Image (cartoon, rainbow, N blue to C red; front, side, top):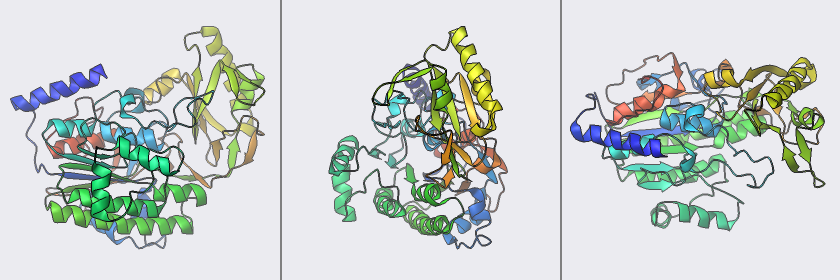
Length: 446
């Protein structure tokens, strides 16, 4: 936090002194994220039986990436934090969707709070540049500094109390004011359906009418359906078409309010079909590295898988204990040699760090396509998966590539950006805003 504040102070000083480089075609920015949208779902929409007028038009009139190489792991929260900071999870600190909670004391808590982010965000950079900022449902946005109108993503139980929680955590008075304007209640955070997205888009349009300089909007419906029914399923194609209409509504609203707006459309990861849950906990239990109590919950642990769909970080209670490290290394080697565990590779601490993965991970297990990390320590090694689609696999798998389209003043129509590093998107947006991200790990993508 101290480093982040210092960086923002430095940025403010640079702005005051006119020390930032000249920015061509500076404009307001609308950043839209469609969770789980694969780039080929746009490029091959017609061949896949979809009609996507908004997305295909946006791609044709602006620049697009063939694919975006994401982060380790390719999960929603780590990816969205990279999209808003320009750095990998090992640096920004959001290395999973769920917090590490081996004894389940946090009751399934996610990384909702930006106080866990270790570097400055685009919201802070835009705010320091004198711009008004707005957010609708972006992951890891509770308590975010630099957002003037914030509707953060948060849920707990899905009951009426969640609406009270959101109202308490949003910008004071914002929910009530916008509900009056929209004429409908703000959707519950736990609602990941396309219908929930449609409700939140109505609130985003109301905010865009107020001409914010930087706006972030997140939609979860595509990802939700791809998990349940699989990527490429009829249900997933229908969700993409319905979401395309929402994108069209947002873009029209943004351009009506701010004709010079730059629209940046992204996704966070790709998708793979799956069929099997793999219980990675059993070997750790057998080796005495995890102890379960009479209630079946973890009562003690020395090494624990931190599951993430297609990968699992292995966290050690004592990461610098050489004997423990070697014991865990031996367990992992035996697992990797057993085809039943469907492990593609084991990354050691150095390899995880090189890939920008969790700084807390001593090892990482990467699963083969079709298998995901299960969550039940009492299950058999392999059981049929509840879901039909999953992500979280290593980012160098082409199936995990995500989407990038950018359209606005000075962006050449039809430009092919090739394969883009996800860390290069945030600094490019900062440049469009006339701001800067001093911690970004890659040069701007556009």
